[in-house]
Amino acid sequence: MTTKVPKLMTTDNVAECLGLTRRGVWQLVQDRKIPFIRLSGGQRGPVRFVPQDVLDWLQKSRVPSQEV
Image 1 (cartoon, rainbow, N blue to C red):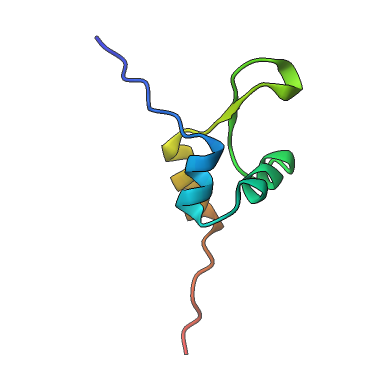
Image 2 (cartoon, rainbow, N blue to C red; image 1 turned 90 degrees about the vertical axis):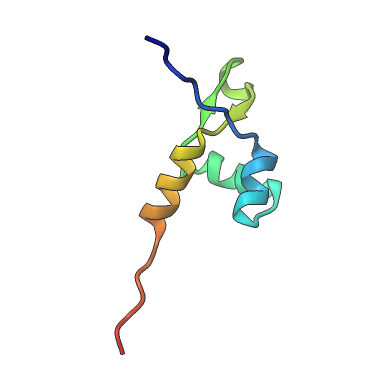
């Protein structure tokens, strides 16, 4: 049985995907508003994102339209 590991996204990848600046993504990370993985180095280690986590986060953040 083989477990497929998802390709991780960088801060730049997420910024481009969401139409945000890199700084905007970092603010979401600092505020712990977006799911992320810190690879190593304690508080200063590199940050990566699982694509499905980002998509799930977007779905949960969705505000439905109001019926007129």
